[in-house]
Image (tube, rainbow, N blue to C red; front, top):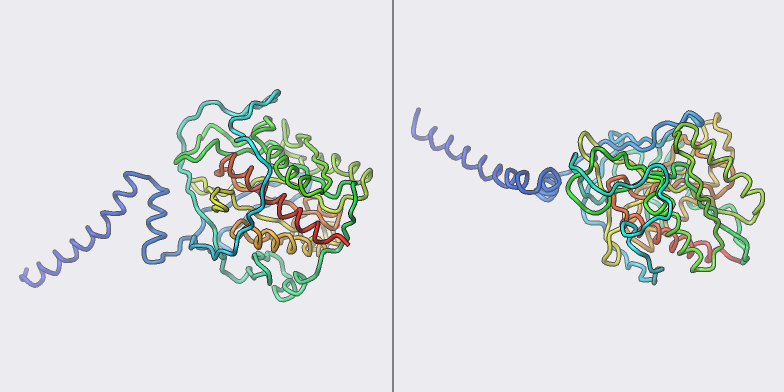
Length: 379
């Protein structure tokens, strides 16, 4: 071997060591989350999302809110910041420190074991043919055959209902998957023995609904919060049971214009749970996603586009008030009881990798922004 070749090989080895050493340190000290963060910072590398799945298909509706990550890419680049809203929110107690009078048949865990990794990430602008930007903030993920241009035109329509200045309730909050739950606090690994469900209403979706309700009521918006559990002990049939809960309420209170089914997502990969968060006014919030269903002619939702109009107004309000809080609206062939009003939406608040405190804060931000939107619509 010539001296020139030996020097060339030695140079290649030194380069590999220089590139590989930081990765070895990151993996050894911090594990997978640090590895991911390092890769995303070096060379502006774009990393695909982990596998994103949400609710298991419900046999009562034949629909689920599963996302296919192969349809898009997103980066964790810094989100362009608008001037954030600095409104004063209702004081809250850390939900982890709350003690429920009745935790039900499936209490929240009090001790934890180690499982797969939790990856903290912030979803920024999405790219891909299915995505388009709303005029006043936020994006739409169009998973239907309706052209983006048509939906963009529809997104510019106002809400298809009016709001009166009344003491009657304007908003109904409920939970089809009531027992969905979250991480206790920020940590590197999740507990593989916990399926992220609990009947303790201080640690499940009722807690998030309470946070939304408090902010709406603080702005003078009347709210009914249905606290019924619809997914325990049986998960299948949840949407049918939640429909039976909310239909009598809508009949009793025709003043209700907005119906929100509050869920949490389940963004995960093999052995990894993602924690999509954003810092707003110095505090971490779980990122949220609005789902607006589309009818392909088989779902019995002739007014689905009216729900979409309202979804776009709410998305824009949220992004203007709290930049980076939202992921794109998912517009897809879903039912989710959205035939009952023209202001019916499903909102995924965080994911199972988010913490109780993060999603409680998200609930506050949703309620605060929705309250401003509804008050601005009053004649």
